[in-house]
Amino acid sequence: MTKEMTFNGVDMSRYFRITNIVRPVGNKRSITTDDAPKLGVNIQKVKRGAKEHTIKFDMKTMTAMEMERLKHELAGVLNVLEPVKITYGDEPDKYYMGMPVDEITPDNITRWFQRSELKILIPDGVAHSTAYKRFDNPKVEADKIVFDLVNNGNEEAEPIITVKHNAENGYIGVVNAGGALEVGNRQEADTEQYKRSEILFDYVTNDGIVKGFADAKKEAGSLRIENNWGRPHLALAPGNSSGTISWEIPADSAGQKGSLNEYLWWRQICWLGAANEMGFMKINFKDSSGQFIYGVEVYKRWFGLECDYNFLVRGNNGPRLVQKWQFYGTHHDHQNSFNAERGWSDIQRRDDVVQVFWWGTYPKFHVPEIKGIKTAQIQIIIGAIGNNPMFSHLYLDSIVYRKDFVTGVEDVPNRYRMGSVVVLNSENDTVTVDGNAKAGDIVDAPTFVTIPPGKSQLEMYFSSWIKKKPTVTINFEERY
Image (tube, rainbow, N blue to C red; front, top):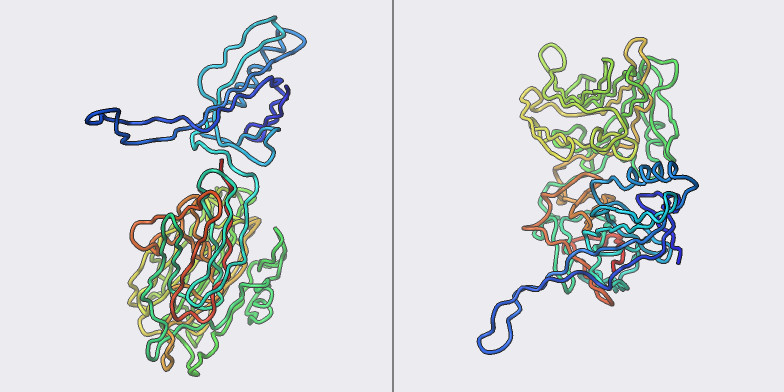
């Protein structure tokens, strides 16, 4: 019986003809017991282990030399150091994560026809559905939303819960029969006299950077909108050494301009096409007279892949460098947090204390030089370095500005702003907010929920004062 098989994306029919695939029912079991007082034993522990598949196959070539060459090629395909995706033709809706174990010793029926078997260890012990099951229509009740879920697998599923906020919120609670997870603060208040946060400009949703560019003051040089990867970007226009735009921060609801307490979130892309490319992007906070207060910049002025990410503040003789980080301007996630798929950043100011996001961390800096100096505008500068080739991709994709602690109103800044997206991912036990890791939001020890086989319910709770419930979706792979 011939069966199709792929291993790490490679069609294995190139190397052999499968004659049988042995997949035991269930998993290996180990039971720990001790003697019962009178008869039998007491079960102390039952553990289910990995799965193990045995692939029986024939290899056929025209000559002995071709056979040995084919065996070497097969060894290269199977040379993996961690589990990879495996599919079988008779299970088109499932995949496994496995890797070879033991030797593969063929029977030499002839030099050009050999028969053997391959053992595959499935360490996580499950088959995964190739498609995620989606639930997005919960019942909305007074104090919660309730999902009726169906898991057709025979193992617990690990859900990815996405919460898009339609109003400010400070707490998310997830509860089902198997456990509970809390993020945020259940006691976080929405009303505190004379304080709240206000979004004063938002160029994030619905290709917002296009509107942002139209609204901005064009100060010098020329920037333009480019389109790559299905979305618009703000970039340096060809033929210009630099381009500068700025946004004046509008007055808050009390009619006051300028702020000492603020939050800026943006997405920027910094991806080199070659080691000799150079350039810079500056995000500056400026006062009402147009003088620099503080800001961050990406700067590359040397040959190579290393790029600087700098935090600067006003100094006695120009900007003072407070902190420098480095990254490689490649497309790899472990080298560059500003590649095409990511690039989310934020900065928060509390007068003379500034918190700068860097690669999942939130270091804070005390900078007395800026104490009492209010921010009045946000400035963006994108530029080249001399006659050197410009960054292939140096973009600003989106930006949103929030003023905190606006006096004279009752609302306070809440943990999850309107429009923010919180993802609770049980597959990798992470919590992210607008793409940034937020492990500190988890209450106590994390116990990420799982979905039991069959029909079940999952309830979600939010801050008691929330004005409009979030839009929530649940996706999970069924496992067998």
